[in-house]
Image 1 (cartoon, one colour):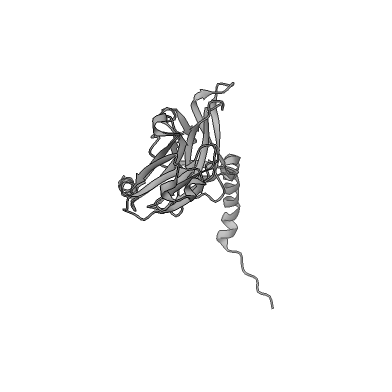
Image 2 (image 1 turned 135 degrees about the horizontal axis):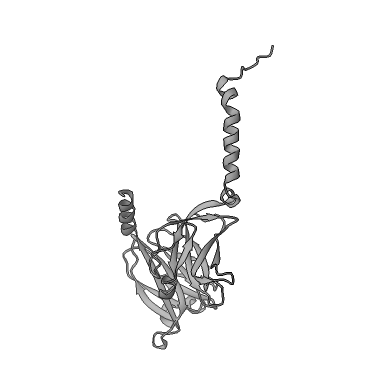
Length: 250
């Protein structure tokens, strides 16, 4: 014996209206907004010159650009793994802002976009996107990048790792609150005993469990200090917590 479920009056009376409204709404939305994936990203200027540039996303002008500090979060629409940044201060042939297309690697949770100089590009910029989520770049850790054209190695204390050319991220998790040596040299040199190494850069480092750092190896600009330099961008967990608390009270 079959049992027929009666059609409810609400369904019969309102279903066509709801369907028409839903289809009309879809028709009014731009296609890219239906396909785009909303993301929150932060930006970091490579140097003071880029920090003064006038740049924008779909949400408006990017403010707070700094070579040593991340911007607040900006919402962007990522479509097919890419989102645009407009160079408001540089125009194309049509008089419109030049566009830098930024590719977000698949699986990235919290992108940090480092804006780099590229004079021959219409926008004058290039970009490097790195994972900035705390589950990846942990507190107390150091993420090193080699921006030079040759392979290097870096040792923090007794932990020595290769730094291939090409901005590949290499992570270190040194013991906190203990001052150790930080050495950079050719890979073969860091395989030698400590006292026989010929180094390209050397300093000391005191790790802090409340901070996380990006360490970018760059060509040196002062011959007195050696052929390499290191650009360090540090974020403090206590400062981040205070900022989040202040934002929650607004």
